Amino acid sequence: MTPDPPARAADAATLLVAVTGRDRPGLTARLFAALGDYPVDVLDVEQVTIRGRLVLGILISAVPDPRGLRHALQEVAAELGLEVEVTPGGGERRRRGGRAHVTVLGHPLQPAAIASVAERIAATGANIDRILRLAAYPVTSIELEVSGSDPARLRVELAAAALEHGIDLAVQPAGLARRAKRLVVMDVDSTLLQGEVIELLAERAGVLGDVAQITAAAMRGELDFADSLRRRVRLLAGMPASILDQVCREVPLAAGARTLVRTLRRLGYQLGVVTGGFTQVTDHVVNELGIDYAAANTVEISNGRLTGELVGPILDRAGKAAALVRFAEDAGVPLSQTVAVGDGANDLDMIAQAGLGVAFNAKPVVRDAADAALSVPYLDALLYLLGISREEVEAADAADGRPTPAPPVRRPC
Image (tube, rainbow, N blue to C red; front, side):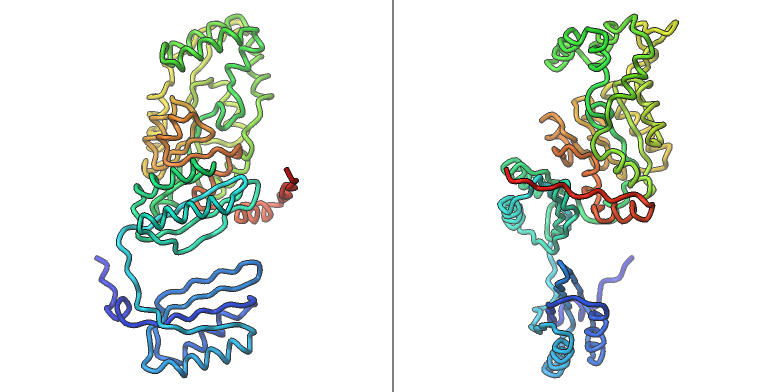
């Protein structure tokens, strides 16, 4: 059992040392060396540097007469070209409730959106302790560290702000589990890939209209997924099997997909794909990106042509969730440390099962059910929900000799 902290650290009077000015190497060391000449304990430290400007806050235990300490710090600050202020800290304030990370993404991100988020956080009785920028392009993403929060209530309150201002927003409890998510499983069609493979095949076969009608009937609830899939595949009977290879080579990956996979693999994540589509497509994706796990349906081929039938059981909504569980067991990862990403109704069970369920450019029913939603067209925005910044990604790419992409040119509307 972890012992309670000493009463002195929690309840005694404190002093807050606030330092601002231009940052330089060795500055922090000089300030703490000056503090070391006095019988104080360091209770909290926060330092942020913005465009070379330093903001440093140090909470220390109080001394009976702070004038000597204040004078010593002012001498060091004057020598370094800084401004320093020493004020009563009011004691360390304990906040009831938990801590949470609120990730905000906008394209662009307007001040009114941030104001709305901040107002709603305050309305719940929570406090914003820190704000970090995760990305400046191709989307703007910031992360707010919030204390005194109920993450479930925050999620409900902030959903309204996201809808009102057209931003993406995620609320996650703080703690080790956030960085410990070690298996990411993605849908393929319209998530990892741009577009639906079966529609591309139907277009080549000249039956796109018929396939679209069946898909619409399934969306209205008149057909279940398995029945609709079988009917659509039957329309492809007689097509040469080579058409699958052609579509695989031509259908583009989602923007940012390679960056996402490359970065997660560097960090030791394992990756899986699940789809109501076809193994012939997932085999291509697995080989191209280096995916660890895959589950899909298999189109039957005979004498080099599609028979219009499927081989084996249908991978449907329940099958996707079961695949997530199977992948996690094989990887030795608890479900609480998994991420599921999808866009359609047949992804709902998988999204509900995962530790973090993410709707990617998804239908409203999926957005409402997911823990977080991304409406930007960049799949690597998922990294920001995991607390990974664009700067970290680019630094890792540079270390591997990959060129850093130039930020987009912003043109007036």
